[in-house]
Length: 198
Image (cartoon, rainbow, N blue to C red; front, side, top):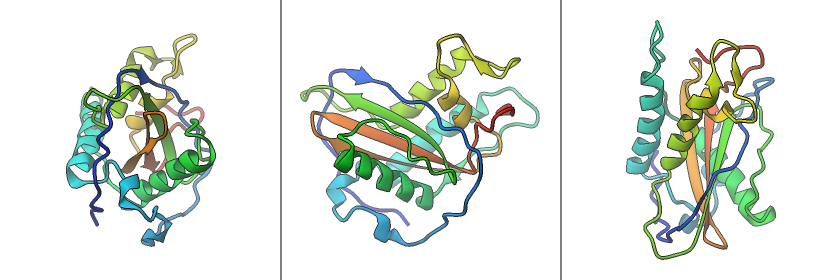
């Protein structure tokens, strides 16, 4: 099901990237077709339109296809359940945490978070830019040791390209002070301790 929404038209001058990719320790089932978990106002949705789903999927699948490994890393497909969970969590962050970046702690999905902030006046970036920022962590990932370069973050990247992840769902929400939060959730989750992404 594609959820129609109005686009958030604010724009941003500065870009702030923050977050640590979650580490999955167990898998719990949270499959649901119950859309009652979604926020009641369509204004809260920024990026669940089909074209934006395509942008998110394209950014993920481009990164996955760029890995020269055999067998190839398969593409991911869109998950409305994961997108609904992402929307519910970032709504909680907006409503109860002042839009601070905090991981949900849900172990059913892997989770990447991203935050834009700035001032009005310029076109807002496509939310799929969040995926591109996570993919840029590739330069700090050391495959041989399955670790990040000293003092660097690379877990967002490893989640994006995690071979066994089959589905992704993303959402974004506007916050006071010209901020935008983006969350992508991955099913099944990646970043298992001691395992390489591919």
